[in-house]
Image (tube, rainbow, N blue to C red; front, side):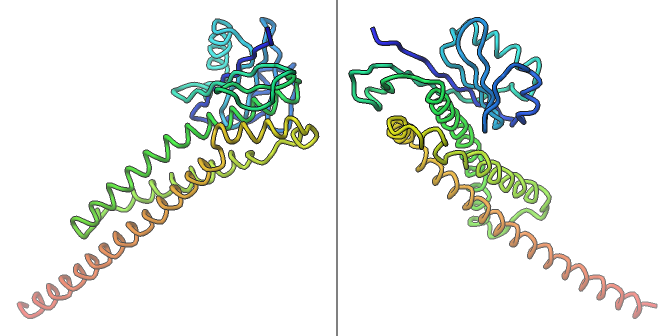
Length: 257
């Protein structure tokens, strides 16, 4: 029976620098974008600085034990996240690529495993960002609906400032993390893996999802800036009205005196 491998990625809310992760696993092999740890109980652990952990061929009990140890050592690797799974089957006699939701390859080398783990990690991270951006998009929609129905916005601009800062920060984080969607260097040197990588991108729909995320974030940012401009104009009108009232009051007091 052809060997079958499992990859499971878990994306967490916080990014963790590779330097901090290196301290947890002093014997890890450091790559360009990840740490690779060979576990004593079998299997491989991949750690990415954008808050994603990928397990290759690690049984559930060992996986949970590793996650518990990670959460204790690094609190940023905790909290609710998203999960992405992929099954890989080695079969030299079958055509490489995706087949029935399973990735088929003639053989699974360390370099190929790294490419697969990175792709699954990117998909898990993107799913997490999609949840955040959808929530921000909904909040923005409510603000715009209020502007449409009432023709005005809240006088307080500080919450809007914070919201805009959150949107800009999320957009920068998405762009900085998902720029890794560029083809890994190892794929250039392996024609078979190059084709498999293309199938993986199509399976997880990485390109279209990234474009949709960027468009939504840009729409959120532009809408918030519009709402903020309207709110500022309202504050200016209130300020001018207050000045006029004070001038009239001063004139009235002068006449009374």
